[in-house]
Image 1: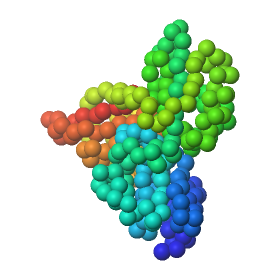
Image 2: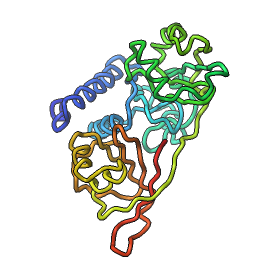
Image 3: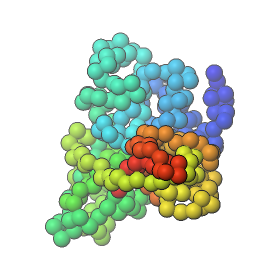
Image 4: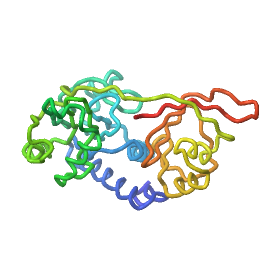
Length: 282
C-alpha cells in the first residue's frame, strides 16, 4: 500500500499528521536509528496506530512519561533492535505498545519542567493557566505533553528540545517571577490522580445526539450542531453521526464541555428511558 492510498479518506489535517509520522518512520529505516514524533492526543494516536497496523509496522512504542498519560509520543526503533530481548519481550510493552518499564534509552526522549510557586500562590493556577503560560512563550502545543497540576505548582512534560528555553523563559512571566523552575528527569514527575465526579443522566435513546444533549446540558437542536461542528469525539475518534449508538465504557469528549465516560447503563425508567451512570473528568 503506497502513501497516496494510505491517505485516502482522511481529512487534510489528518493527512498532514500521517505524512509527518510516516516521514519519521522512514527516517528510522533509512538511518537505522531511533526517532520520535511530537506529542499526540488520543485521537491523533488512534489514527497513527491504525496506519501503523495497515502497513504492519511493529517496531514502535507509545510513551507519555507515565502509564496514564493522555498525550504521548510515538518512538520508532530500527530492525536491528528487534532481536534484543528487552525490546521483544512482553515485559516492556503492553498490547497497545505502551512502555511499561523504565528504560533509559526511551526515558531520555522526554523530560519535564517543575514549577513550584510561593505559599501565597498555592492553589491559584489551573491546568489552563500553566498551558497558557507556556503557549504565551511561543511554544506550540505539539511540544508539550501532560501537565500535572498540584496546589504547590506543576510538572510539565515536554520534549527535551525546548527544555532550556522554558527554564530560562518561564521565570520572566509576571505570574512566575517568584516561582522556582527547574528541569527534572521524566521518571521524577509527581503523578496526580485524576479528579472525577459521578452522576446519572436519563435519555430516551442511546443515540449520540440524545446523550450529547444531556452531557452538554443543552437542547437536542444545539447538540446536533455541536456534533456537526466536529466538536465530539467518541473513544478519541471524531464522530459526526447523530444516530451512532453509545455503549458502556465509551469515552466521550466534547470540546468546550469536557470529557465523560459512560460507566454503566443502569437500567430503564417506567417509561422506557435509559438511565446512564456517567463519570466526568473535572
